[in-house]
Length: 217
Image 1 (cartoon, rainbow, N blue to C red):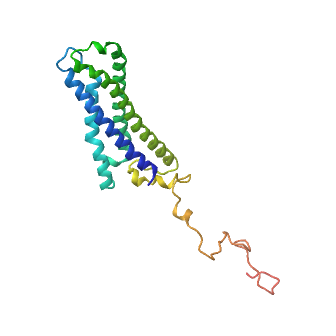
Image 2 (image 1 turned 180 degrees about the horizontal axis):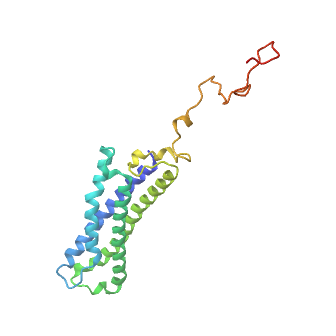
């Protein structure tokens, strides 16, 4: 199996795992702080939204690609756009949580009730898994984009195909794209190549017959 297919499965699986954790952390923070005097952090709602979008779209992308060929959701251009968007949401969630976590180290002990204090440690966890999910998804999209550009420069345009159809495992095609049929055809065994114009007397000049000193008209 080509390494990009394995990378794709691992990246999307890890993205789903991080989304599951973000969903739990964000939902718990929202439920705990809903009836308290502590303001609800922005990362909690963003984490829930990111997780919902991931679970609605990423599993169908994996399943449909396994069961069908040529599906719209499996096109490389669609994967690049959507996975980049999900990765950006993960980065935004991790960045917002990291910003809150930096402010919670001093004021965490003053939170009341006691159940709200757990949000401090959960904020740090949300920051970590948000950034890890972003790294996995954008790492895969960056590798896919590099391969797509390399193949496009050689005339092999596969952005409307899926990863399993693109033929990346065959390597980068030679310069100039796919050879034309008449350029790639080889001479049959024993065939002697001909030259044009034919060798001998120039065209239009009379040829003298053997034994006659004069040309025949």
